[in-house]
Length: 207
Image (cartoon, rainbow, N blue to C red):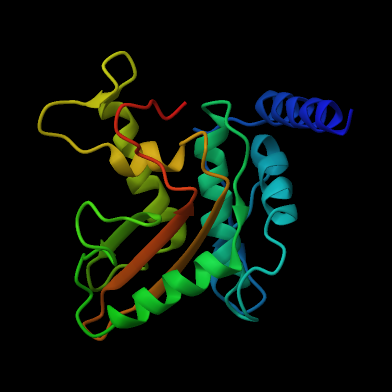
C-alpha cells in the first residue's frame, strides 16, 4: 500500500511539473545573498525551482548553497523535459566532487577522476576559459546541448559527436547528484558533477 501511494505521489509530481515547466524558457538572474549573480526560476520554471529547493536539503556549506542549488535546478529542468523524476542533492557526492575539483585548481585540466572505463560513479566535467564568468548553469546547459546528437532509436550518438554527458543527466536510474565548481589558478573555471547510481550502461537506453 505504501509503495502504491509513493508511486501515485511521484506520478502527480511529474504531471504537475511538466504542466508548468518550459525547459526552453530562460530564468532571470537573481542577486544572491552573498552578492553573486545566481539563477532563480520564475513563471513556468518556478515549480522546478521549488522542487529543487526541497531536494537540496543540506546543500553545500554557507556561501556555497547557491551554487549547489543552481546545479540541481538546471539538472532537473533537463530531466523533466524527458519525463524523468528530479534528482536529489547528495552531500557525499558533493564532497567527492569538491575533492576532485580542488585537485584541478592548479591546472584546470579537463580530466576525469576515474580511469577511462572504470567509473564507479557517473561523472560530467566542464572547463571554461579565463575571463568568463562561468556558472553552474553554463556547465549543465553545455552538457544538455548534446541532446541534439543523441538518437533514441539507435541508442547512440551521431557519428563523430558526443552525447554521454546528456544521457547521464537524463538517465532514468540515476537518483542523486553532487557537484563542485572551482576557480583555477590560471583564471579558468573547472566544474564537475557526480551521479549515483551511474548511468550510460552499455546496451541500455537512458529513458
